[in-house]
Every structure is written in structure tokens, then in C-alpha cells.
View 1: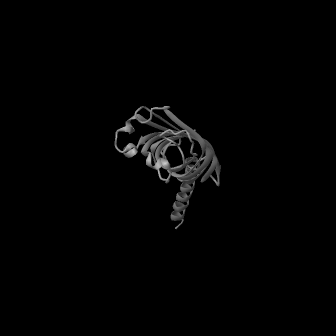
View 2: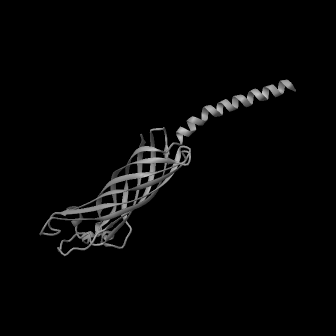
View 3: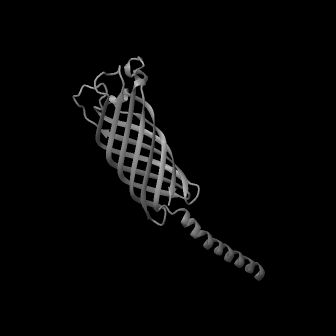
Length: 216
């Protein structure tokens, strides 16, 4: 009996030492705080009823998100400021000019620069996050005849906001991958210049992207 008790005591001591050795590593793995850089690549598409809904189809978008997170609640959550810059190249809708090929002579671009906050909750190496921000939404169009013989471009800068959610996984302490779902909104107003392309309504998009994220 004494010999068995001794074995159990030694096993318990060994387990305790192993737990103490593993705990710092686990805490470090779940540490969500610090500086991050995220590079998303994805698609954006209009979901509102404004003029942009009939102007472009799902389009390529690329960007960079960066910020600093302050750890909360024993490494399981973090909150901090973030800045996003995204650029989309509009894929002009085939029916833009009644299938006359005019879409080949039209270029669309959209740049967003947004500042806001990100909240992250970790589950081991995986994490979920929410983000929201406000900033500038800049849209630009340029074209060649025969779309329109006067002028050759139209642009507008307006207030913009983004609300989004996402999930991710860290493969190492340094690098991981995230999946983002965003709803960017641009509050553009009509003008009276008579150009064929006018950013004349709120632009509401659904944007999905995959990103490589670096925690520094």
C-alpha cells in the first residue's frame, strides 16, 4: 500500500511539474495583445438599391489593416484601435450600356481609409473578432468615347463607415490567417454635372476576404 501511494505521489508531482511547464506556453499562445498587420484579398459587391447596384458586379479588392490590441481578461480577449485601407477595382456590369460593349471603356475604382476599433476573443490558437470604423470613402470613374464625349472622369469623396466580423487561426505566434465579412458604406450625394457615371447614392457593399495576419 505504501509503495502504491508513493507511486501515485510521484505521478501527481510529475503531472504538476508538467502543468507548470505547459501553462506559460499556453498563456503565450493565447496572448492576443500587440501590434498586428493584416493583408486581405477578396471580393466586394453592391447590396443596396442605389445607382451602384446597376453599375458593377462582384469586384476584386485588396487592402491592409493594422492596429494595436490591448489584452483583456487573462489573455482571452483584446481591444484596440485599428486603421484599414482598402482599394477595389470595379468589375463593370455587362448590362451597363445595354450590352453595347461600353463597359470595356469604363474604369471604376474605390478607395476606403477607415479608422476605428477591433475587439478580439481567443479560443486557443483560434479567435473571433468584431470591428467598426469611420473615415473617407473615395470613388472614381474614368471612361473613353463613345460612353461620353465630354469630360473623361468623375470622382467623389464622402464619409464612410465599415462594420464587420471575422474569424482566424494563428499557425505560429507570428503568422496566421483570417476570414473577414465587412459591410462598407459610402454616403455619396448626387451632383448636376451631367456625366454618365454619378456616384449619386449611398453605396452599401458586402465584402468577403481572406487575409494573412502578422502579430508582432
